[in-house]
Amino acid sequence: MRLALVNLSYLVASVLFILTFKGLSHPRTAVRANLMGSVGMLIAVVATLLLLDWSQGVQRYGVIFAGLAVGSVVGALLALKIRMTAMPQMVALLNGFGGAASTLVAGAALFEELARGRMPSNQFTVATVASGIIGAVTFWGSLVAFAKLEEILPGRPILFGGRQAVNVALLAISLLLGAGLVARPDLVWLYWAIVVFSAILGVTSVIPVGGADMPVVICLLNSYSGLAACATGFVLDNNMLIIAGSLVGASGIILSEIMCRAMNRSLGNVLFGGVGAEIVTGAAADAVYAGRVKAASAEVIAMVLASARRVVIVPGYGMAVSQAQHAVRDLANLLESRGAEVEFGVHPVAGRMPGHMNVLLAEADIPYDKVKEMDAINPSFAQTDAVIVIGANDVVNPLARTDPKSPIAGMPILDVDKARTVIVIKRSLSPGFAGIPNPLFAADTTLRYFGDGKKAVLDLVDALKQENHLVRPDNQASTRAQ
Amino acid sequence: MEALAITLTVFLLAMFVGFEVITKVPPTLHTPLTSGSNAISGITLVGAILSAGLQLTTLTTVLGFLAVVFATINVVGGFLVTHRMLRMFKRK
Image 1 (cartoon, one colour):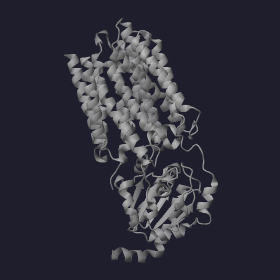
Image 2 (image 1 turned 90 degrees about the vertical axis):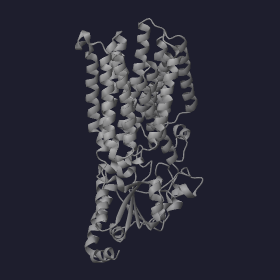
Image 3 (image 1 turned 120 degrees about the horizontal axis):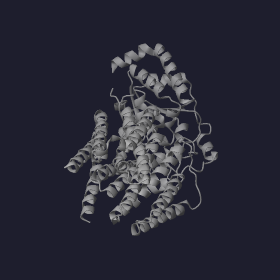
Image 4 (image 1 turned 180 degrees about the horizontal axis):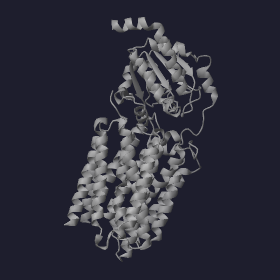
């Protein structure tokens, strides 16, 4: 009876998890969806506690409550302290912890079976091996991703000769040891050996990936952490773990595919290509830029903006680095108060993880309905008077469309060059992640404003306010005529 | 073998549900989707509690305790940070 009740609770929790993902289909329902997920988790935990034998008193289970308390405090501190720009690191770390927990649970379950003198079934051992491999790869891979994003390790790809062969060998060894464990489950050391080799595999498979490719890696590790939980579900014969784990697994796979498509690269190329390891030399850059780059004053740019009816702002990760979000919001509000229509165009890989830029803009109180994704905003550039590109480079590089030999050839970009005027705010002409020059910066319709993102935007806001005083009557007349 | 067929059925159906539901999540919410699904992958907590509670050997209790800590960080941190992010999304 009690078991049936617990299983029904697990069913309720599973349904709540599915509804969580369903509710995330719109910002309006998303907060409630996330709460549903946490209620589902609470139900699952309470139901599991009911499975324990409480006849010997609460103190017997002190170790559980100690674990829950430590984990809650650490988790809450992480969640409340983390800066929104550091969200990818946070997610990487949490992915890793989930993977580690699955590996530990699967191992403990194996040792328990043996301690009871039972011979585990093949399903049990195969799933234990899967959980051990996936969980360990997730934990160590995530730690490397975390270190790269936090710049403890260099962000550029760290390449070593024969890395593919090394990875294949490590996986093969882990699988062979796994086959050994399935044949002889009593050889406990095999499990630890699997974990060690998989841990090395986790490190060697993530370390060659460059910082700008981290979004894909994070999605993939997210997927792994779900699949590890799923494998643990097969170990424990627990349907709830299988359902929750496969939902997460599916989510991570979908997101990594979306990211790869946004860069026009295959998953294999991202993981093994080591793109960004070499920097293209300056010769090509000179040919593109020589004498053609126009640096404009804040006043000239303000004049252009003052007469613009429609302005699109294209933020890149550089904007977040210089903490210019709030200044950008002020500029957008100022333009709107003058009657211009302002929207934001965000490329899928604009941040350090999928949707990162949207979170950063939301943090600066920019309404989400003003932030458009690439496919939605691209057709509108031809009717746009001014585009402000701030801290973005490769995602607005027209070479992706025109130069089939370029490393970014075929990558979908924001077609800002179709707009009447493009204003580029950037510190220098240094290349973006792809290491190539950007002809957009030398185009006739482009105005360059050199400077640190935040300060540059503040300069423009000041200049626009001045402009406000000068041309006010004109502007009002034209607004009325509209 | 019969039990395996049932769990495999559940696994495949859940995968299909996952693909159907998640493809409808808009790009705006992809970061909260990642952190929220992250929290859900902490469901391993259930297995961790059972191991820590069973206390069959010292080794399994220690492994269970560590797993409870890791999974709880995952769960609490994941849901909380997702909530923090989602509350920032406002309409005009």
